[in-house]
Image (cartoon, rainbow, N blue to C red):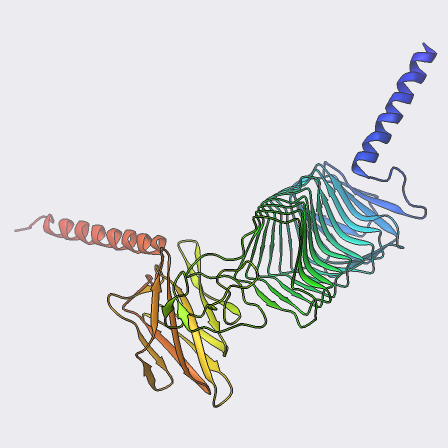
Amino acid sequence: MLSKTIFLTTLIIASIGVLATILNVPLTRAQGYETIRINPDGTVNPSSAPIQRNGDIYSVTSDITSTSILIERNDMILDGNGHKIQGSSIGIGIYSIGTSNVTIVNITMERFQRCIRLDLSNTWILSGILFMKSGEAVWLNASSNSVINSCSIETNSGITLSRAANSNSIYNCEISGCGNGILIGNSMNNSIIDCNLTNNQYGIYLSSAYNNTIFGNKMDMNSVGIKFWLSSNNNFSRNIVSNCIDHAIILEDSSYNKFWHNTFKNTNNFPEIWDIRATNNVWDDGYPSGGNYWLYPSEDVYSGPYQNLTGSDGIQDVPYWQDRYPLMAPFTTFYAGTWDNVAYGVDVISNSTVSSFQFNPNEGPFVRFNVTGDLGTVGFCRVTIPKSLLWVDDGWTIRVGDQQILNYTSIIDENNTYIYFTYNHSTKTVTIQGTHVIPEFPSEAILLLFMILSAILVALAKKRKYKNSSPIFL
């Protein structure tokens, strides 16, 4: 009996050790550390911890030092209230395994080996968190459907999504001074949107990563803007990659990735692209949508899918790298509005400085913006307008300052109209006017107005019927 007990005990300890190895979770608490537990039933241990509970909301009431937080409860919010959780360069600051629907906001974390680690956890939100002076900011391991937004990261390593983490979103974050700003490893269907990645060794690193979206980010002064290793079917669009110390993009054993509408501004002597056994990658979105902007554009005298038609179109006449339709100027998107839950943007490719974009369907069927350039030079714009946002029956009316532009090029594809025109530089206002514009009110609002109007008409009809049916007294 005793030998059986010893065997079972040994088996349990070994199993726990294997699980800890798989998840890379420390089994012992760091010396000198206490742990605050938010238990599955919502209670907090120890009760003296500076965390005040009000229903599903847990508010930090003072700075927390040399203490880790273990979250075991689902469906809760931890509000830091601007306070700090500080370690001593070891351990994990906040840890959770197998939880869901947890939000952490408004807190500073510093001096941990890893500030936040989530294992097998879903639908978390990390927002408004400052990560400093630590080994790593965030590690999501086998975790899905979570959001990291509006965070500032200055740690040795930034954000890691690993081991089949999927459908997570990282957006509007500031990440600087890291080895890897964002690392996606063995993961898929994640999004990196509108982040600033500066002075990192790798702005973004994809390792065995598939079907991820990298959109609208700014990567400046990194050693390498983004590296793809054994990664396929990822989309890289509308990013700005500038001033890389080495290469803008490294592709190693990676295929079927797509790059379009990006701006590459590298001023060093290295090639912008380093291609190692990479095949079947796509570097443009076809014609007339176009490819990417590279620092040194060539001539634009011709147009058309084969660039053999007379007339400029904002696309270089000669391919660059494997980009068949390199753009003549940087690509900028201006937000026009949202209707029926669809966000619309107007894209402008221009050698001018473009500012003060305006679009309001209540004011009329036009877009308006300012262009600025050096006197004596020729400016150009190629404006991409969604056909369901603004369109014409016959022709566009284009004005630059007080001059109407009659010699312009208009190209249409399935979804957009591409308008190209030139002008003499100074500071001028451009107006592009159509004949039809998206409805001022979304369909839900129109339906609501119709229902209100119908109710009023019914009420008036009942009132009239009541009046006509009133008894007549003699």
